Image (cartoon, rainbow, N blue to C red; front, top):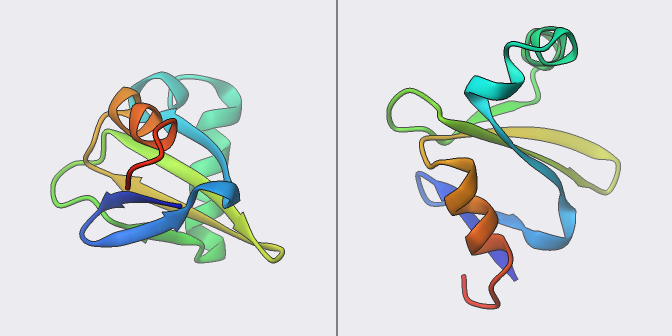
Length: 85
């Protein structure tokens, strides 16, 4: 099964490590350091059509990717917990 994170980008549900709220995680020390490191590493994929509200961290075959989404983390989490795309 797949999760649509926006902009027609699908992520396999079994590859998802976590779904994070942009506002909550960017105020913590770890959150502040994670996203700039991910950007420098080139692992961010921007699926947000507007300002990102959340991001999804996924690992597929040892490759970590961070997907920015304009959808709220609660919406993505709800979609990820259903069997429908």
